[in-house]
Length: 306
Image (cartoon, rainbow, N blue to C red; front, side):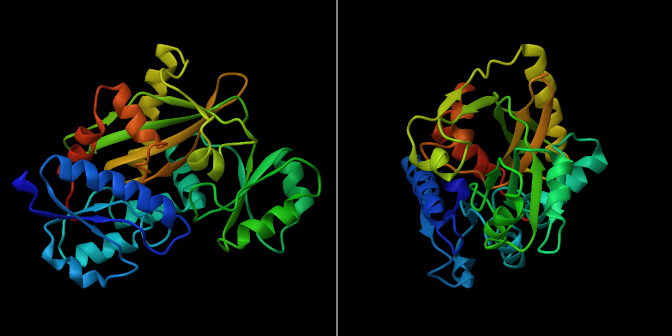
C-alpha cells in the first residue's frame, strides 16, 4: 500500500512498559508488512527522534511515559509527521488518571469516588471516606504498575509509598467490585467514532494486574460481555462521550466497572492500547468482524498531525 509511504512503528522506549511495547509494536509491524506496507521498527531509546524525518507516517506503539503522555506526540508535530492516535493534549490528560477524573466529573461522566493522596494525608480519614477495600494507584502509570488493593484498615500509607515510587501523584479510589469491562473505540471525531463490542474481563487473581494482563493464560475475556443489549448500547454511547470529553481521536480504550446494583462507573482511558496476543482492542475488533490486519491499517489511515 504505497499510499502510506514509509511508515515507522514506534516501539520500546524508556518507560516501565517497554517490554509490552516491544510485543505490541512487533505484532503491528508484522501485520503492516504482510499487507505490503513499507514499515520499519523504530525504538526511540536507541535512535534520535530527528531520524524520523525520512518517514511519511508513524504508528505509535509506545506505552507509558514519553509514549502516550503527549511527549512523543509533540515531537512528531514539531517534525510535521502524521501519527496514529490522540494528540498532545488528549494524550497528556488521558495518561493522568486524576485529571481525567476531574474532567469527566465536570462533563457528567460517572467515575468511582476518589481522593488525592500525599505523604501528609490523613490516611485513616481517606480510608473512612472511601471505605474498604480500596485501590491505590499512581496517577501517571499504566499496565497496573504500582497498584495496591488495600483490604485492611491502616494499609493505605504503605500502599501510598508503593504507588509514589512510580509517580509523585497518587490517588485512592473506591472499590467497585461486580465486574470489570472495556470498550474499544476507533474512528475520527469528524468522520465518526465507532464503539467496538464490550469485553468483560475476569481475572483469576486478586484483580486485573500486570500478571493477569500479560503473563497469565487463565484470565477470561467474555465477548459478548453478558450485559443486556440495552445496557451495552447505553454504555457504548457514554464511552464515546467520555472519549470525546478528553479530546481523543484515532483509537483508544475506555475501561469501566459495574457494581452489584448494575450501575457502571468509568475508570480510565487508554490512548495507546496494547496490541499483543492478550490485548483487548484487537479482541473486540475480531468480535466485530475486523481482522488484526484490517485494524492496524484502519488505525494507520487515521494518522494525522495534531
